[in-house]
Length: 318
Image (tube, rainbow, N blue to C red; front, side, top):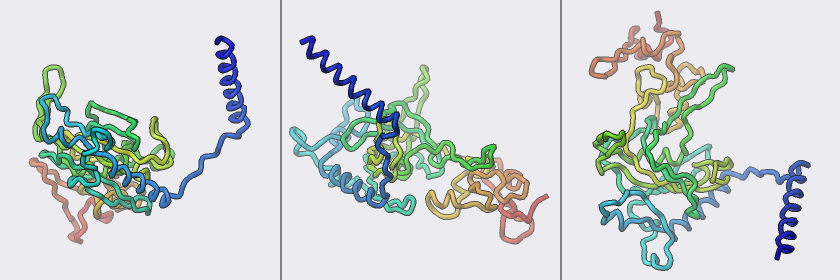
């Protein structure tokens, strides 16, 4: 018996040394970037199969127990669950088409409960719990305590005059899904600092292809080219003014969706208006070219009467 163990350990050690030698010699397999459109088709087949063979805990939501946590849970239709309704037949499953990097993707939003509070725009921040799973239902991330997430992120210019994005680490598919939900209407802060939410917050999940997640990139416990399932609860949203110029970010776009947000750049300096404290590039901050009234309403003076408000008009400055 001891001899067998010795040979097994020796064999493992030999394999390890061979592996290390291959790495040292630069013989490790090269990573091959996949074609996004082909991967989209592969992911679509995998997701459609998942929708046909899995269900969520709809019965718990229909008859919640006193200690039910209102979290979406998915399982395979088999054995004692053979009679469950598949996700593909759920009336509250919505397919949404999203174009990202010129590739068209289908993602699926499971709207278990819409919520009754405020609904976030794609420029806002959201306070959510999130659980991320792969299609084999292995859990890659499970944040049971709510955390803030910025749906837009901020574009900045660094010391090397290069543009970069900060606070924009949420998956594109999740950002597209969460704006279909609303937060809670009320909450109380307990003596121990915890929060008790009214039981009317949004609850749902999104099933998204890798092209709306990390695609060829990888995260801890998330391999490259992985479609994801993100289950969440939305408790609160915050209207965001990313550049702190006094104008909420949702008002600093021209069109709909994320492309409109990032492409709207009045002075063409590379910083989109929602991230630019001087939108017209005339040297006078936007905050000084608008009027914010005591009730929070905003006025946009047009000093020269040319139809363009001062904060967007480089010809109007002091």
